[in-house]
Image (spheres, helix red, strand yellow):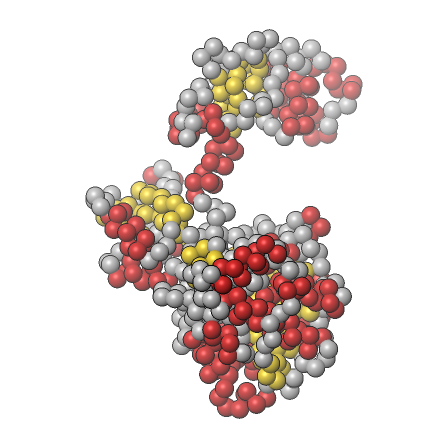
Length: 233
Length: 316
C-alpha cells in the first residue's frame, strides 16, 4: 500500500544546467512527460514537464519539427529558466491513498518521491496509480461482477459474503460504493466464476435488490455536473 | 437440400458437473429432442465419436496440461483449475470424444462427404486456454479443429465466429498471433460478464494483429443491436479475409430466457445469425461450415434453437 512499492525507481532526471532541447529529447526517448531536476547530490530542486517546454518554445517547433537554425535563439535556455521550483513531492512512506488525494488536490500528473534528506528516490505517475487500481478491480482475472443494493447498516456485507461462500464461489474483490440514496450502499462482489445465475437467484430470494448493470456506477460527479436523469430504482 | 452432419454421442452425457451447475447432460438431451421431431433427424447424416488422437490435442494444449487433466480424472478429483470446472472420472475421456467427433466431422466436410454440420458436444471448449481449464471448458474444441484444418488440410484462412454470450478467451489467446486464423466474437461486454476479456480494442498481436475482432454488447441489448454489430463488424471482416472454412462456436446463452446473461435475443435472432453465417460460408468457403456447441443453458429453449440451427444448415 506504500508509494515506495508502486513508484518508478529508475528516474530519468536532468540538472538545472541541462538545455531545454536536451530535456525535450529525453522526454521523447523515454516516452515521459515529467523530468525531476536534481543537483549533484541528487537533491530535488525542481521539475520540468512537457507543458513547460511547450510554453517556452514557439508552437511551430512542435508542429514542424526543429531545424538547427531554429535552435540558435533558444540555445542558452536552460532547464533552470523554466522549471517549477516549488515541487509537489511526497515521501516514500506515503500510501497509495495519500498519493491519490494529493494528485486530486494538486492536479499534477506525477509526484516525485523524496526522502527526509530531500533526495529523489523515485517518481509516482498517475499511470502507476491506475495500475494499482486495475489490480484492485481484478481486471484480467476471469470472473463476473455483480452489483447489490443494500441498506447502510451493520452486517449486510456479511450476509452477502456468507451466502455466496456457501455456494462454493470465491471472491476476486468486493467494492462498496456510495449510492445515490443516502442510506444505501452499492456492493460490487467480483466473483471468480462464470456460474452466477444461481448466485443471483439466491440473493434475490434473500430479498436483495440486484441493480440493472446499465445503472451501475462507482463514481459520482459533483452536483453541478450530474446528469438530470437519476437512474430509477 | 444439403448433406448436413449431426454429431451426437450418448457418451457426451457421461460428463457430470454436480449441484448448482448449469452445464448439465440435460442440455444435450434437450437438443436431441428438438432435432428428433418431424423427420429432421432422418435428413441428417449422423456422426458418432471416436476419441481424438493426442497429436491433435497437443496442437493446442501443452502436454503438461493434458497429463494433469488425465491424472485429475483418474484420481477422481472433483475439479480442474477452477471451482467452475466441476468434473467426474469420465470427463477426460468425454472431452477426448468431443474433440475426436469434431475432427471426424471436419474431415468429412473437407473430404466432400458433407457440406456442413452441427456438433452437439460436451464439455464446451472456448474458454479453455493452452494450459488451463476455465469456465466449464477443458479442451478447446474449436481451436483444435482450426489447427487440424491448418496442419492436416493445409488451409491458410480459417474463420472462427463465436456467438456465445461469453467471450472465448481461450480461442482468442491461442490464435492471437496467427494471421491464418481470424477470430470474431460477439458477447456481453466484459465489464458486465465472464470472463472479463474481449474488449473492443483487442485486435490480436504481432503478425496476428488485425485478425481478432470483438463486438462487446451492453447488458439489456436485444436482436436489433446484435444484428447490426454482426453486419458492421463481422460481415466486412470476412469479406476481406475470405475464409476457406468457417468454424462456429455456437452458444445459445444470449437468449432472453437464458439466465446466464443480460442479453435478450429471441429465437428468431439465432435463426438470422445462422442464415447469415451459411450465406457467408457459401460466398467464401464453398459452403464449408462446422458449428460446435459451446454454452446455452435454457433447457426450455434449446430444442427449438437446435432444430432451427440444423434446418438452416440443411436448407439455408
